[in-house]
Length: 343
Ligand SMILES: C[S@@+](CC[C@H](N)C(=O)[O-])C[C@H]1O[C@@H](n2cnc3c(N)ncnc32)[C@H](O)[C@@H]1O
Image 1: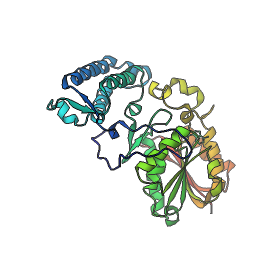
Image 2: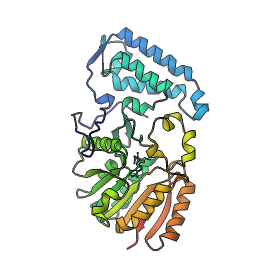
Image 3: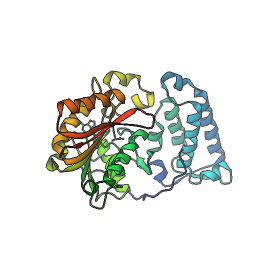
Image 4: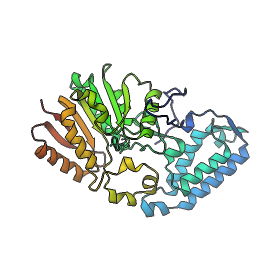
C-alpha cells in the first residue's frame, strides 16, 4: 500500500550523470507548490477524472491484464497526494484556493495520458516506491519491480556471514533507476562500494540523480556502457555481482500489458529470441570479474530460464562456481539464480 510520503531525502537540485547531458525530471512530489487553483475547478477536475477511471471498468484487465477502475481510482488518490500541497484539506474542502505542484491543465493532461494512453502511473508522478526508497523514474528507465527487491535481501543475507563481501566492491549491471545499486549500498559496510552500469544514457542519468538524492555518491559510482565493458579496470576485483537484465523473449514483447510494452524501454525488456542472451553473457563474464568466493545473483523470467542457467553453469562453466542454486520469489516462481565464484 502506498502511504503518504515520509520524505527522508533532500529536494535540492542535483546535477545529471557526468556521462550525459540528459537532465532527469524532478518527481511531482518534490516540485514546489507554485500553482493556485480554485476549489471548485479542482473538484470539477476530480469528478471528471473519477468518471474517466470508472468508464474503464474491467476492459484493460480483460484485454492485457491492465488496471481496472478500482486500481485507477486508487492511483487518482495517489496523484492528488503528490500534486496538492495539503491533500487532506482538499478532500475536506477546507481550503480555497488550493496550492498545487502542476497547473490544472497539466492535471487534465496527465490523467488523460494515464487512462487513454495507458502511460504508467509511475511515469505520471515521476517516481516509484521500492523497498524503503522513493526512486525517480521516467520514460527511458524501467520502473523497478517488487520481486527485484528480494535481490537486496539475498545480498544482505550473504554479507552477514562474510566480512569480505560486506566491505568489498560490488557491481549492479543494467542498473536502470539505480534501485539495486542504492539498495545494496545501504546494506554494505562503511568500505563497501558499488559500480552501477547501464547502456542507456537516460538510465545512467536517472540512476545518478537517485544516487545523489540518497547522498550515496561516495559509495555508488554510475558508469555508462555495455555490461562488463565499463568494469574492465576492476576485472577480478568484485566480491559481488547483481543484475536484473532484459529477459523477455523478443516475440513476447508485443503481447505485454500496454503500460509495459508501449511505454517502458525495449532495451530494458528484450532479451533476444530465447530471452536469455544477456543472462548467458552475464554468467560467462562473471567468471573473470569475480574474486574467488565472490557472490552473484541474477534475476530471470522464471523457472525455465533459471533451470537452464543452472544447468549451463554446471556443464559449461564446470569448476568455476560453487553452491549454484535457484531462489524463488514471493509467488513461488524460481526467479533468481545465485552462487559463488569457486575458491
Ligand atoms: C530489466 S531492466 C532492470 C533495471 C533495474 N536493474 C531494475 O531492476 O529496475 C534491464 C536494464 O539493463 C539495461 N541494459 C540493456 N542492455 C544493456 C547492456 N548491453 N549493457 C548494460 N545495460 C544494459 C537496460 O537499459 C535496463 O536498464
